[in-house]
Image (cartoon, rainbow, N blue to C red; front, side, top):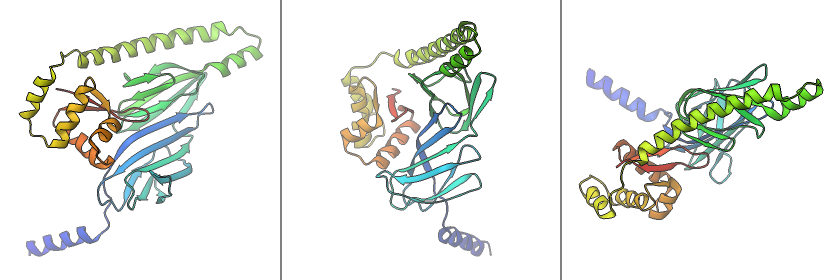
Length: 284
């Protein structure tokens, strides 16, 4: 009887179209002056994916677009706070939409609140001044901030707009913006200092010679592609973009992604999410 039940369950799982896993290659949130946020995902479907269910940030979605890596439309269904995507043969799926639900405003200060299991990059308006961060960012570059996974928030003011408003009321802008600028500098200084300390901790290990590194690789359970990838990263000073490594050893994007994940699980590399591409850093 148990054998029959198990057989029926197995047949059911095979015949029913399941929702396949996927990987979020990048997540970028572009924030506009009015609080609207453009959300952009780059997804890597697993092999033989028939469906992908992507939970969406926010509750209201406008101008939802789903395309493959060549800009061709991909079929999808929207409902219950998620997208059901049918990737077909696409190796990469790009999703974008707009939502007003991720930001709130109290007085002068806007706050972006995001809860996600993936690291993400926030592109703030050019006139934004950051006044608070919930965590040490992975990277700060101009008006872009890359945050780690989890429940994160970024608070900011819009300096240009606030200055204009103050000017219209006849008040000097210095009492209004100067404390905000000092606060932002203090926050960014502390955050940047923490980030630099973490980077120095990683980079503070003395790099072995190439011969020593090759000898160490010989004692590890690696295939030829993994070995070539690690040597390429070593020759670039211990850090390189995934695209660089992929092109250097001639691997398709999804194959390379699986290789990087294997190396990360083995504790040999650390994958760093960037605004436009991911980076791989040696942990040897």
